[in-house]
Length: 360
Image (cartoon, rainbow, N blue to C red; front, top):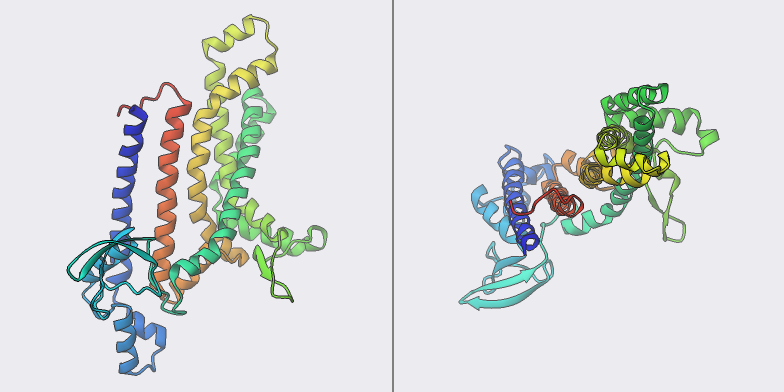
């Protein structure tokens, strides 16, 4: 029962965070003194065309009213004015799939998937635009996190069991250097060295996306274009996981039960890996789960460097084109991933570490 209350409390706090995120991103992108309709149509657009765009995207309404309508759109449970098709709160069936629960007069209460609006540039649904870009970014983040986890844990264990030796000092120097490097800087260096100067040896490209269209119109996966962005994105997590693993291992190896295991005659490596590493993994695992969501935002810069057509590059290009609905949808999706991963991390940590109580 305690764990159930803990999960409910975390879910409620997650909903409050998402509420705040929606308010912040809407105010940020809708109170700016930018005429999105004119930026979409160009400076030579006539007044009638601009007015039509403003009406289609509710830009002719006060910002606070539009924010209420945006909440209604992104909420799974929404209100729908089913009688007046010109009403701002009318959900168009061709754009939103919904199921009516009940109605009061002209207003219906419906359940649906969150609706993020339409792109100002392409008129496509934002969810469709983003769904095409999530897979490349997800693959980039998950592979970078896997690489960082394996290498970081191995280096951290080596540094801990070889404390104060040349191995320990070298690993600490490299990890400190890795933490200090911004991801985009690492990406530029890797692209220049391995994608340009050594491209004949590596077979890697300076720029390239994970997926492409072949001559038959089929989608093909170019795995070689994943290597350099993956390494560039994983440099900082490797360094942080290395130092975190080293600190956790040193703390665990100084505990009384480790000395007891040694006194029983267990081999050194059995003590290190069976007793030491196992108990040192709690903070490392929670750090890894938290880093996975953070890598989604870090991928924005990496995707720009390598022209890697994922969620990050799409967001940057939409921002430059003043296509604010796509930018808002992207930020909202990343925030949702952050909230979900934080809740998962809290629950995982409470299950892994018996010292953590779920009563608070």
